[in-house]
Image 1 (tube, rainbow, N blue to C red):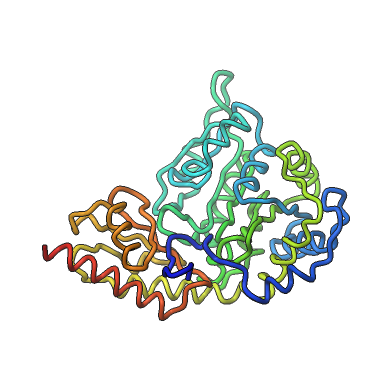
Image 2 (cartoon, rainbow, N blue to C red):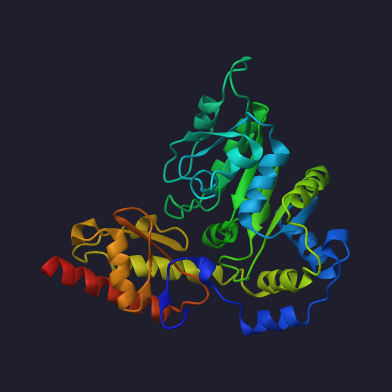
Length: 350
């Protein structure tokens, strides 16, 4: 809940809980840039262990995690194989081109999930006049494709294909723990085929800021170089890391509730005139609604919802994207579904 609204526009809308605020207030701190902040050091060690990697670095944002990984793995002119709807391509202001000088080699995955065969087909031949295929990037879960969960077997197969052809593998793990909650497979198993992986603290985990990028010790040493260059080094960052530690203790298992709530939201809208939704495709905490049959564009439909106390963002001209998170209860999700259904019925009956 955000103010007087039931806020389903993003899981980034979460606010620190009382317990998290207490942890922030009581955080041990030091100079993070010098490696002297005990809370940051504990967070990085814990995430590295959770993901089965040698080391990790705390960064201000998930976008910085993605782009530092690209900057370490790639040289200017290299190509990255990834889904056409990947966040790195669609929603990071062209950072891969602006910062690293690399180019996307997009593939049309099945709801954001591509196959090892597609990876192999996208690899450029080794010729002097062609860009070098260097990196494969997996987004878990696949946000703009509908929150699709990558099956572990597919992650492993894609990783094996990439490595067989001399490519590295990166995982954008912004909602990795939602996938863990949905499948029961561990974050460590999902991360094993990947040369770098990060988790977001500011989405379902409910922290105010931050992400943690993990990989080999050598990779993280290079990542620190780019952290400085991009202005990401911090001082007494333990007040932020303490929120992450609290979230890992208290907010990981409850992500299953978010997944269930969004599936319930979608189910309540099945058969509503003017709304097209497929609950069977709601695998995590994200659902897309096609509202074109109501006669309103998604942006206008979204504005009408705000007037009724619900926030759901317009993702495309005809589609809304709704996300469940820890600030929205099951009852509020049901109430939001009633409001969406009521508006759709009003519009269709005009």
